[in-house]
Length: 250
Length: 332
Image (cartoon, rainbow over all chains, first blue to last red; front, side, top):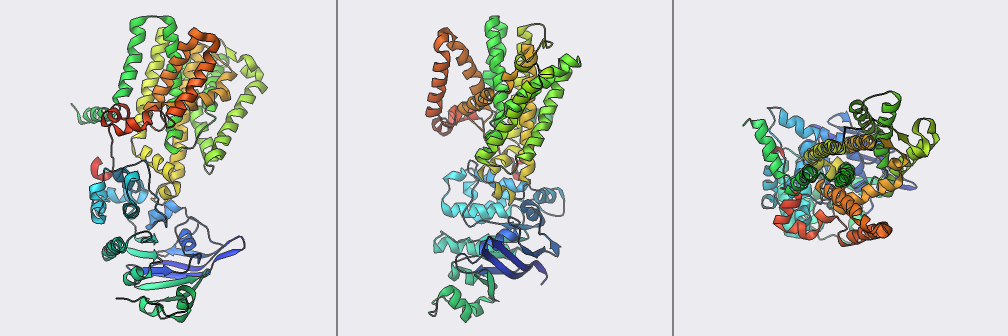
């Protein structure tokens, strides 16, 4: 599989706090990769660097072989890398349809809809696929947390990304709702979307991803398949505590 | 009917009927009444409505409060006046040039204040207007200092025709701003208002749209300022003063920010109220400002944004118009 996203030697310090130290990351096209780590490990900082919101102190980020460091967040989105946020960030004061139409004004979506070979970004289709079709005319401010989470993902999908960075997509959701989002992510992935997920809910995450990367105090301490990660002693000590964990892959 | 015309009429149908009512009322009254004093008062109301609406396109939609709006109004007023007096440009040329200059300075200020948010943004805009205000005294050889520039060529031959010219400008500004705010540009500005980071991660170059709104805001304020200077045949430091900036903020806020039609109402009705209170001249300012405080207390979001307006389908349709969507799926 071809490499889609590659980060090399990423380091980032906030004053005296070393948030990331020499982190490497590779994501192949079509892959589902998870990032785990204790609170404050640097996961979201990594996302902020990849999506162009923070400049790293050193290192390099390649999207499909092209260096995207120094590009502005909207330019990176237009190259095909889109993120969601740990806390839901709705466009309050809009209807659902209007909120999801915002990304269709991006350069990426516009050039898509003007070329005949690629299909238009179909926001109604996205909302139907995600289960928000009956809320199209609803005010964003009237949605519940679960629906806002879905709205955030719909909005990200409307930029027509090649790789989607999801920052804790399951947080605040019931297991059933998380299960629904999991299934939806799998569907998108089968449609060709590459996904990179930060998540604390390991039971759901481990079932979803093919590869897991563990960050601890800003450093990558392990990267392997979910089966291997949950047996990795460094990971268990750093992240899950010393006792043998009860999580399984059932 | 051609498709273009049909598109325009179907679009007009989605606009708030309240806007048409007030525009029509203003258009009819001077022709019927012929009371010159009333016409002069309405002319002033129309000028303030232009200012409030142009202010709204930036601040109402991005919530970055521009506290230095007199920069554009007075700047264009002075420029238009100076072009007229010193270079003998006719108003038909000096006003558009001055408005254009105001638009360009909108781009510059917009660019310089891009990274500023909240009170820092407001203070920067305040400072720009303050600089121009001081300059109007320092450069007294050109600006006439405290007395300003007098003897500008009048717009037309009489107050009624002056009024109708101003009225047409207001109608134009109203529909252009409504059209703009209901296009993708308005949606993007609202997205920036909600969360600029998220707008960026939707692939939107937010800086561009903010500067664009700033330029538009300056351009229309410049048209209003230039027309006002020539209608009065005078331009003075009051047009650059902080009190004018604050007045514009109040008119738009009380009318209802982020709606265009709200500032139209605020500008017209509050200006008329201010003049109506002249029957109790001694207490006018006290009563007027007192009422403004009451209005802000009763409707902090502005009258057209009141909950009972937004929640009643009929009132909402009347004051705010019909919802429009312009996603690619519905736009065709």
